[in-house]
Amino acid sequence: MLLKKIILCGFLALGLTACVEPPQSEMKVIQVTDYDFSHNDNHAVTVYFGHTGGDHYTFTLLRDEIKEGMFIESSAKNAPNLVFDASWAGEYYVQSAKHDTHSSLKILELNNEAKVAKFEVAARLVNPKQKNDYISLEKTTITVQGQHFDNLTKSF
Image 1: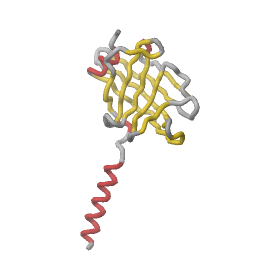
Image 2: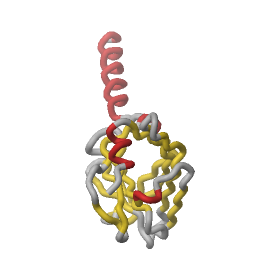
Image 3: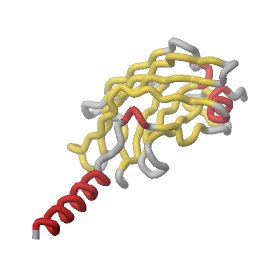
Image 4: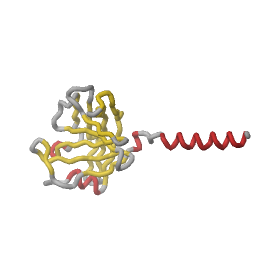
């Protein structure tokens, strides 16, 4: 009987561990757009990052603002040059002018020789269908490199 309890506890622990999300620091770049599109009449680029293709955050910024040290902060959607959203667990989250939402983005490094860019990002977003459903991204460093870096810095 004791052996059955130990085995059952082991399976329960394994099941609970599988439900826990990896730490945000382990988020990886999934995609960086490599095509020309505009945001507010300027060339823009979108970076998708997260744990999987299904659960991810995105930020869109203007291509001509991609410079080391650049910092954008948006509270209640007041920075038109930064768009931040998320698709998580089948739900969509956005910044809102009517809710307590915010986002920030800083380019920590932009190295053309090594083809590496590092962004520090943070956000609090709301589900537009359920006004009390928020998702938060604590300050996280995202590294864009290789082909993703080429897409990020592409000129149009």
